[in-house]
Image: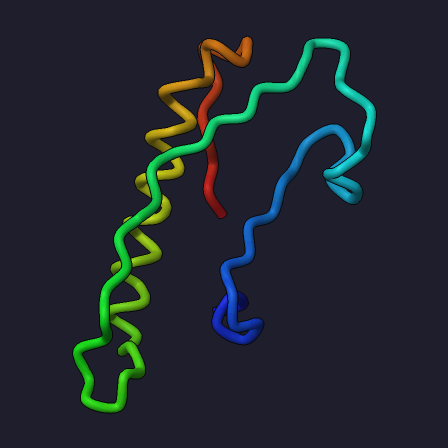
Length: 88
């Protein structure tokens, strides 16, 4: 719902400096960045082009699944083999 009000996807990062996630200092353990394949886009089923709440929820669930999949794939390389991702 927040993303809808802003008109774009909002991804919040949480860590040592949650209030300033782009601190130019590299953490002492290094930094791992993982980039995944983009999710395919779809047209809304409605004639006016506006997606229904169900369509938005389905795409959001797909985004969450992809995010967890990438996290699980690269967490060991980042030094956190036993970490679990919590999506709020």
